[in-house]
Each structure stands twice: as C-alpha cells, then as structure tokens.
Image (cartoon, rainbow, N blue to C red):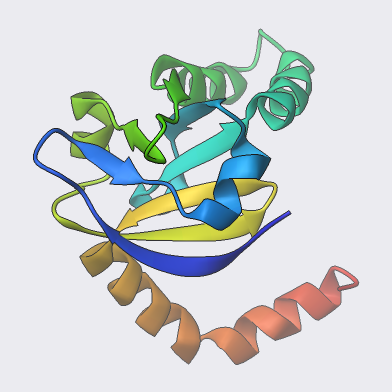
Length: 143
C-alpha cells in the first residue's frame, strides 16, 4: 500500500528520486502512464496487470471505453529504478503533467501519483475547501 506525500525535484536529465518507501512496492520495474487530473500514475507490474485485466472487460463497441483504454495505454511506459533510486520520466509524460523542477509524489493506495508542485498545491487547496462535500458524497457510497 502506498501512502504519504513527498516533495522532490526533477533533474536536468528528467529523472526523479523515487521515495525510498515506494521503491519496494513499485519494484525494480514499474509502469508509468498519464493519470487523471493532470498527474502521472505509477503502478507496480502486479497492480498494472490487475488494472489491465479490468480494462479488458470493457466493451470494444463502446466509444468511451475505447477512449479510456487509449488514454492510459498510449502513454504507458515501463520504467526502471536505478541503483541511486532514480527513474527517468520520458519527455512526453513530463509535458503531459507539466513537470518542471519541483514535484510532489504521493501514495494513493494501489498507485503512486507524480504531480507538478504547482498543480498539486492548487488541487490540494481546492480539495481542502470541498472536503465536507466529498465526505458527504462518500457517505452516500457507504464509506
């Protein structure tokens, strides 16, 4: 399980240091892809396989389902963590998530999310204001 928030930097070569607490869960090789809300999603190989199996259940005849599959799979890359705990984020994904020098890496249960610090701060501020509304909606879902 991934939990916590870590602030890191992107180096000149487009690499980040993966927080030590996330390295074991992600493994030496993991899948990085476009995420929702303008961030990147990182999945362990096992969790990616679980996600892929769910995606395979979507009907090919449904236009929205096809778009959803394309969104996640077209941007997916296999990444490796080097001996210094770093991984390279490809330019396409850096551009998608507007990643510059300052990053926030968060654990979200079964995945890791990588955010530009600016986007994360803006998102967090907006979500803090709506926490009560979200809590009410989750209560309606039984949580």
